[in-house]
Length: 295
Image (cartoon, rainbow, N blue to C red; front, side, top):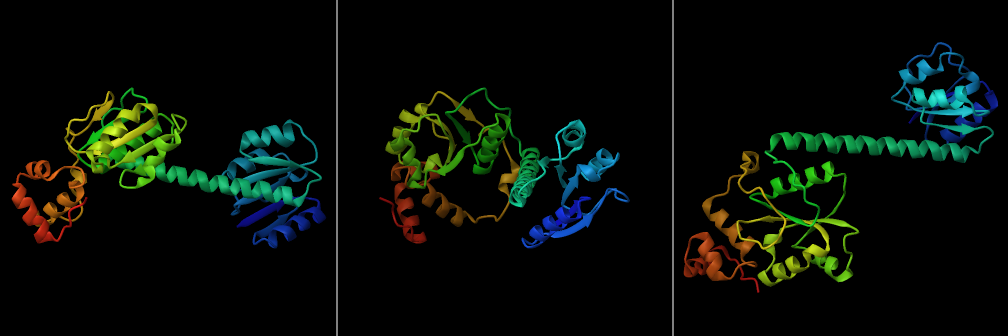
């Protein structure tokens, strides 16, 4: 990482450069702002004693960099105006170099975090435009998102989280970890988004729904079954052609996937009915596709 140290106290500038250089930073030193406008540095340590009258324009011209003021005293000119122009922080002389290093590390991490958040925001903005995402409900968790694809349910849940400025832990009903919600009595202190409700057996689904109102949870279910719960967002009527991308399964592959996905949830008679085949035909397909019956 490149660091520009603008400091007219030569010994201090060299001490900072020596310490930072030993930690892998590439440092340059200048005694004043003279002849500087835009600089190719990620961190600028700017002494108020070396600023002159052009420091505000200089800071604005280098808004890409982390600017930390090195000041001998606190005033409008040394702190307030530089911060208003875009400086990130200041440190009061005399200071420990380790304190300066901590400030630099903090703002470097902060910049990385901001860049990451902007990346994910741009991704979800893109996906929301690609998919038909309906208006959000006025519900507070708990509620259920009933959809015809996992992708649509996930994007809907993320849109809700972003719009309401909440975060949630993501769980999957295929992973036993979700049971900890019921065991630990976490109540509504923490929000969860739990997918694959359709994979639960009927007695498990019933137990969870009976207790769901006690917790701050958003649950996605990909099926057309009737579900008894007071707050359900049904987006199964919304068609998203983008969800049909990827490999095209053959009819045989599709049958195999559906049997494996839902056999733990439905008894054979009901599963066969939903697939439009007889119970005997379901048994034959299991044998043909080498699918072991889940107990």
